[in-house]
Image (cartoon, rainbow, N blue to C red):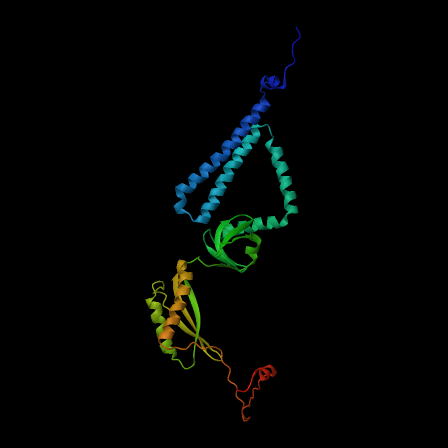
Length: 292
């Protein structure tokens, strides 16, 4: 009796599992296991000593632990699959050099990112201002940083620009000074205005007692005396205090009849007689106007 040929499914079921297939299966399991182990260990590290480190340090440590463990499991998995690690590392080195020459901007951002992380000028959660962009630092990566502005806009800034530009960290220190510029008329008593402003600052709950509020005469302008009213508050109260204090100043000036001048121009004609203006109705108005 003729033997029927095996189908493809029969050949697949009866296929012997050789060492190469077994190595690929074990390597794949190691790669998957390594991913979950790296996530578990990094998350456990953050949960264990998270309160002892700053958000920036937590981010760096968590990523370092995750990628280090993932790299170890990846190397082990590739070894089980039969790949020669030395050959792979050599090829990866050549590939990295080629990519580096092709993308010099990325390499520059990478090196700048290492300098930023080592310098520690700002951390995750700080409010910084760079290139006319102000926002909260969401993450500090090797190529760029991510900000969220006050308007809730997501901004990505390359690290190379941060190294070259002037950067302001608005929340590095626990307290901040708020300078409020205002003007008063020349007829006002500066001492009286100074006492009134300091009284309003002392009554405000968000103004710190130390350092003491200051009122400084800036300059004598054409039609006003310019003052600088400096108050101190905690960094989280800056926006609220800046707005509310200016309302308080306006109400206090209105109550005590202190004039806030607006630009005025005085024309002196000298010995010339005053100009006489005779306003004539337009042609249209003449035709429309009828005698009663």
